[in-house]
Image (tube, rainbow, N blue to C red; front, side, top):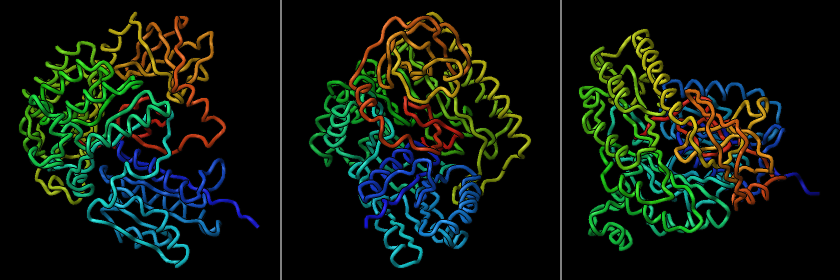
Length: 506
């Protein structure tokens, strides 16, 4: 007698690397015979965790506590915990939540199916944490969440030592993929219908440093850097040669590695989109020094100025931390100054979160919560004002949107659809007269601007049906979208939407 396949659910927290890892975890589980749970209680729940925010631990253990009675009433149910918090806490997880079956780290996500089976057969928890990368994630099976937009990991790990960030100690030193492997993956994705890819790395524009000295790098890397180009600029230009690839994005770059040739590659490569996420963290040179960020305000604003000169329509977003230890009112005013000068289209703003294991956690000058909260509210108010003013400049513009699935929470009530402009702004638009699918392209005119979105309520003058739309249509009837994804960055047309920021890299 055949038994039904075991079902799974993955709950993802944190940065885009985690989201991409969860696609790999889904692919691994489905290759092992599991199926995604749809409107049923899953047999396996996997938490892919983040360790960046202060409440990450409490959030995980709270969710594990809620699952305990569910597991008690569901014979055979298993719970697995992976990701950065698992890499950091290791045996602590089993001690605090002994009903967890599997704990695995950031370096061995490919072990999950075997660990689940071993825990089931041996009837005891399995904890397996590797200290360095076992298999580059992109070689693992994948169940992508979107048929029209995809992540492509070009590196893992980070060589920076920012005093507020625990990620490098959990993800390890930077390791880069060979350009040929990256481009082969992109070409395969395009063949499946993908129109848009986002190049991913903890410090994406440091790509190439993971190979060590250029003289020892693979021939394809040396060829890419002829003429003095950096490897990342060369990779962007190579993406421009992939036939059928319409949109290229990348995240997250570090200002210290942002070179003029990257700006030129962005401006001169037609399918590289006019959008840039450039983490600031602070506008104060003193705070940047304490954060161990190797750029200063003048350098940062100089990059912004060069980007705007080369790409006038670029939308620039950022990350900012408020209340870093020792931050004075004068330091905070420097951050507000940079925000006014840079005129970000949006910003991911965070109150400094004390993380055990980081140098900043033991620094003098930890600020009272009420001081941090008051500064945070001032920063948010200023950025909201700027975001709205910048969005108003879009009024009357004609934009081509990549139609998205599930981006507009109120679309059903307002009878609109949603899509992403080339600069990654979210646009809600009137339903066209002809059928349109996620992955198709529509041309619209912007009629209204809000701080966080645009509206195009005039009739849609043009719909371009695409291979991506065909791929989306072909996928219908299968399992639905993944639930519970928590991002910390602008989305790229994927179904998953942020519920709370969880970003802390670059």
